[in-house]
Every structure is written in C-alpha cells, then in structure tokens.
Length: 120
Image (cartoon, rainbow, N blue to C red; front, side):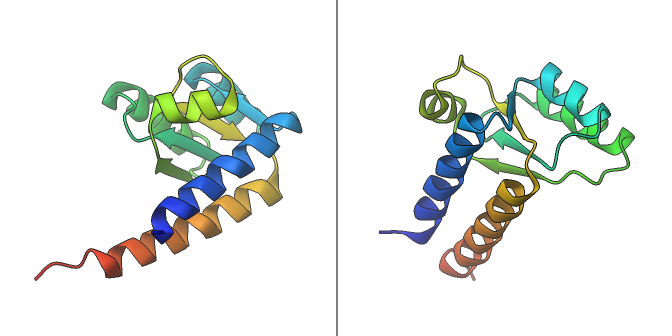
C-alpha cells in the first residue's frame, strides 16, 4: 500500500479517538471560537474546503499569534463520514498529544510524498 494513504488513515483514526474523547471541534465557527479561547492545538482542513473558509481560518490563526498549525488532508465527505458528523471541512483538535501525533504522521506523509513524486 502507499504510505501517504496509510498516514491519512492514521490521522483520521486519531481524529475519531479525539472525537470520542470530546477533544474534537467541528465547523469553522466553532473552531474560531475555540481558537480565541486558546483551546486548540491543531486545525485539520479538508482538501476540498472552499478558499473563503480556508482564508477565514488562516486569518483567525494569524490573529491568535499563529501558534496553531494547520494541515490539509482528505475530503469533506470522507472526514465527515468517518467522524459521523454533518458535512464540514474544518476540524479542531483540543488535545496536545493527539495533535502532536497527527502532525508527525502528516510530516512523514509530506516527506514521503515529496520523494515519491519528484519530477525533473
């Protein structure tokens, strides 16, 4: 199997655990509120989220000193279905350990994807 798909599945699995633990916020407005309350450690954005929504999140992150990283994976349909939530493309992680592990997987996915897809 391919490593990038495996890491995306791992990130989604951790998001499911975060939801069960009550440490997942869904929706742009809820994430922005949590961001201002200093309760987020990571924002996950679906790859097909509209540019306007992504810009709102980027602006809110910048206003809160830009300390909350973001990552983009999958699609709104896949993420929402996996989490059993209404269709949305923005998810916030409120647990530091879940967020750190997701970033590790995402970083591994990016470095693995870059070497596998290098073009000359």
